Image (cartoon, rainbow, N blue to C red; front, side, top):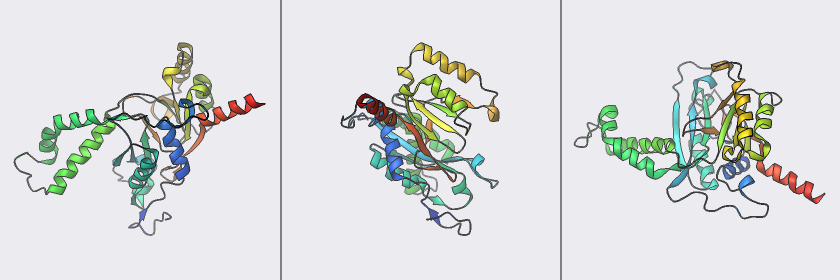
Length: 281
């Protein structure tokens, strides 16, 4: 369904523009293709351990909107354990009404597995205090809330905690806030080396570079740090930043940021295919 400002009550699903690209991107994030598989190998079926999950969400951001009064925040946080489930989760997260909220929305996916067990412990440890302080709910008396409201609040708290609880780190990310691929993106690629890069996604304002930092040697790390240290400034002037913290997420390939279609411009599969072709020549 096409987005239109003339029918603000309609729901739109066009935040997913390419199922094929979305599935391919999720397979990279889950170690099924690219640098973690040799040519001809079967995709890894046991990438996620029993207590782990992947997670994506719709993020509403003021900077994407032309309308005032947009309320920022994460919406429709969805978990998944296979790329196919990730596609279904993306469609659920993308469901929002046309108009300013749709314009301000973007689909993101956390780049590393989340720890469900730790999230349950965190939720269990603080749910009583959180509900009483923030929602006016105690164990003894729901205080006007019906069962659906009570359980819905708990469910949202758990999903937020899952997002916060990183199980392990396989990928790192550099956010390039420059749309010219011949400037800062080229410098970042040269510093990291394509052999360590898993995927590069073109975003609304630049690029997200996903790479395996643990495979880089000290000299390569110093080279990357030198590029990062040459930022022209902070805030709006900043051109390259390293993703920090446990909740690092990238733009979902095959999805969108506002009305910009995000897409993969490079992935480890392309490098492996090129290397194979060179060996056969």
